[in-house]
Image 1 (cartoon, rainbow, N blue to C red):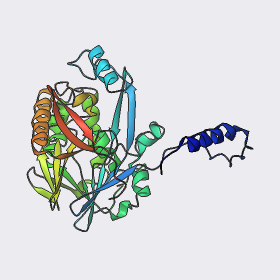
Image 2 (spheres, helix red, strand yellow):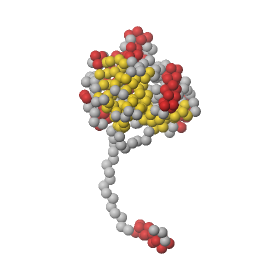
Image 3 (cartoon, rainbow, N blue to C red):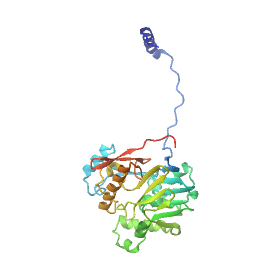
Image 4 (cartoon, one colour):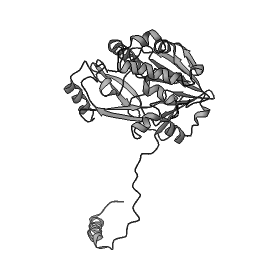
Length: 329
């Protein structure tokens, strides 16, 4: 219907008169929430259901030693460009739960309940968010570990030091297991962080887990649909995965990069927790060139939640394009 001048004028009069109408009392105010909703996100790769389960995040002050081969002002500028607070770094943690071939499989276990207590609930949230997503740890068949850093293995234990997944076989990279369980390597470890990692790994795997551990090799399908891929440098046995089912495929990159801002945008920057920074950089470029060429989706353990996206080349670096949130599975 054509809007006539008379109709338009009548509408204008109605709008002008609206403030003179009696106010309708508002309903009761909504309660103020004091915590976030449980954090998990589901999507499918072929017939395999993937649940990304947040273990939280860690925010800390940026030190010169964090990226030893870059200037602090350059790092701060890169973070500010990504709308992150300059001088501060945020690291996210996102283990996975797979429903594959009738089995429940957990990939990496987060920081664990001790971290939940010490961080006042900002990390170590895997158990809580798994429960919210409907998973019982007793029904987990297999736990797959990508490498032996604390934010990946400490969730293997409960707060009282017992196995968090009591009925699960624990699959670990053979090269990683050999390195961290070697007494000679432990005796040569530099004081500080490396000695602490050796001690932590011995404590975790000697707490009733050794009989459950099965080493796996790269290039093998270790559970249905999940193939282990060598991505060394971050640690000697660092492992990523290709998850494939039907026509679906996603590359689970573990710690090929940490937060993509700044480590995908600046792949030449070496984080202090990369055990061999030069090798880690070569791996990062090799893997990202591959996923760009094959247009693979990438699931990142340290990407902002839920950590799924695509990678594209951007100058000398890469840009991660987050996958849009899908309200259906």
